[in-house]
Structures are given as structure tokens and as C-alpha cells.
Length: 307
Image 1 (cartoon, helix red, strand yellow):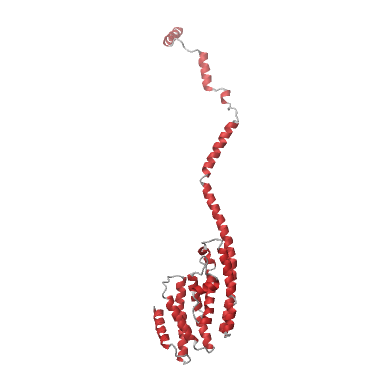
Image 2: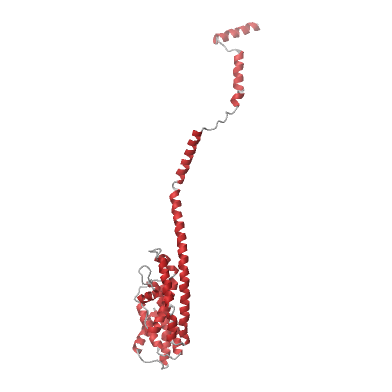
């Protein structure tokens, strides 16, 4: 009965699939699907690129790198130029500073000579010692002009390196000129004495004005020493000079900077000289010359101090 059932199943399967695969074929397919061949698992052998391939790769990589650095080349060149300019500027400033130190040293010697006027030394002796240094100052400023000629149109770039020394030099020249003549040293006269009359290297107007105001700081002390030495007419002369100088500075539209602050100090110098003058006048030691003008100047200065 079992053999009859098996025979019937085979007959039905053959009718459905007349060409069934053999068992050996099925076993071969199953083994191929489950276990791959060892040759398929082996890595492919390494092959070095040919010289032509290497050249192509290197050229493409170098072109890519050069393409990335190309925009940076102008920037690098620009800062290289900046570095060279800054180094040249440092060297130039060192040369300027060397000359400025000599100007400062000469100004100190000139000021020490002028201090002799407070010791009641003869005025011609004081003036001769002071004027002896003017030639040295002029030579130093000539050397400074030669250095600045190497970089034209750069005057105000380096002007701060000798600004304060120039203001001091102008104040000493102005004080010497006042002791000699009793008048104010003019701007063009100061420039000629320092050799600063060139359009490319001249005496800055603000330096001149500050120097004049520095000079006015010395006059109250000078007045006190002169009165102590018996010159009772000196306060009147100095008072007249400072009053005219104060009126002249009031013609300028000064802003709130260093020059304005120095000008404010001129009022207090004028006040100190006034006090000495009126003290001498009350004691009957001063002359009556220009008494009306002195009284008018006092009234004007009182109103200025109040404001």
C-alpha cells in the first residue's frame, strides 16, 4: 500500500514538472550558496600606479594647493611691505631721537645760563652765555631737517618726536629776547634763529605759541627778583607786556586742548605780577608813569579772572 502511495505521488509531481533537477545538482547549488570559494575571499594583488598616473595625480594635487594659496599671496606681499616700512620708520626715529637728545641737552645748558638772571648777575653777561647756545641749536635743527628730507611730506608723522623740545627752545629764545629788548620774539624771528624757515621743515605755529606761554611763566619770578634787587620799575614794564600779550591771545579761538590750558595759566601769571606792582606802588616805590593804563589793565584782568 505504501509503495502504491509513493508511486502515485511521483506520478503527480512528474506531471507537474516533467524535468525535475537531480539530487546532485541540488546539493551543488546548496554548497555554492553556503560556502564561497577561497579564491573569492583572497584580496586582489597590489598594483603600483604607472608613472603617467603618478604625474597626473601630483599635478592635480599641486594645482589644487596652488589654487587655495593664490588669494593669500597678495596679502602676504602687502604685510611684507608693511614690515619693511615699519623697520625703516624705526631706524629713522632712532636717528631723529639721537639729534633730539642733543637739542634737549643744549636747551638745558641755555636754561642754566638764563637762571643767572635770578642771582642779580649783570644782564649782558647772562645774555652772552645764553646766546652762545643758539648756534648749537640751529646746527641740530639743520641736521634734523636733513634727516627729514629723506622722507618728504612726512613732517607731521614724526613731529611729535621733537615737539616738546622745540617748545622749550622757543621759550628760552623768547625769554632771552625779552631780557634784551623788552618785546616779544615774533614767529618768523624764532624760526630764523632755529633755522626753521623752510616750507618743508618750519616752526609749527602751535609750538611757537606754547613756547611763548612757557616764557610767560618765568616773568613773575623775574619781577620778584628784580624788585628785591631794587628795580622798582620792572613790575610796571612786565605788567604792560603781559597785558598786551593776554589781549593778543584772546584774539585766537582756542579749543580745550593743551594750548588752551597754557593760556589759562597766563591769567594767573598776570595776576601775580599785578600783585607785586600794586604792592610796590602802594609803598610809593613805583613811578607814576602809565598809571591810567595800568589801572585799566587791572580792571580788564579782574573781569577775565571772574569769567
